[in-house]
Image (cartoon, rainbow, N blue to C red; front, side, top):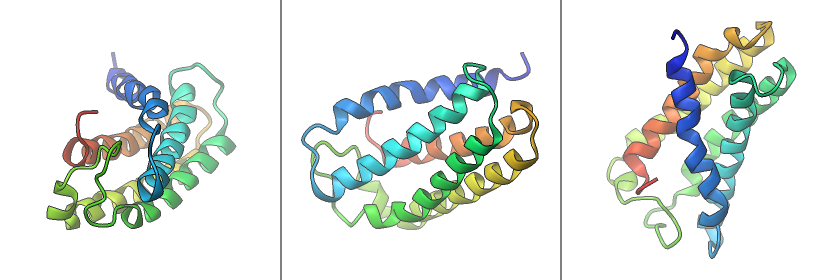
Length: 152
């Protein structure tokens, strides 16, 4: 199947999105702020993902808005991780600060891929026009979670 990678990628987000509600209980301060930021990113990915999966109609305007918000949030990510802020219920791991440059690079990549998604959505007539770029955004999220997040 030509698009099976995109489908697998979309379904890989579901446990993370569903677990966010439970993960926020007890969070305070910067940990809560970043969990809320990540929840927003996940929600916008879910909105686009529903279009990719055919669960909702393609709406270029919604994709553009969602992708731009993801890009804006990507710029905020580094500020949400002051050194050592790993208190429960945070899933952040110390590797973030040990490899800060890689963490910053992934955050920048997320923003770059999200902006590209916004741009291609403007010209796309259906999900086939955004699928590849949506996948790039998702892969960036996954890469960061793989390296810098405890047991998803």
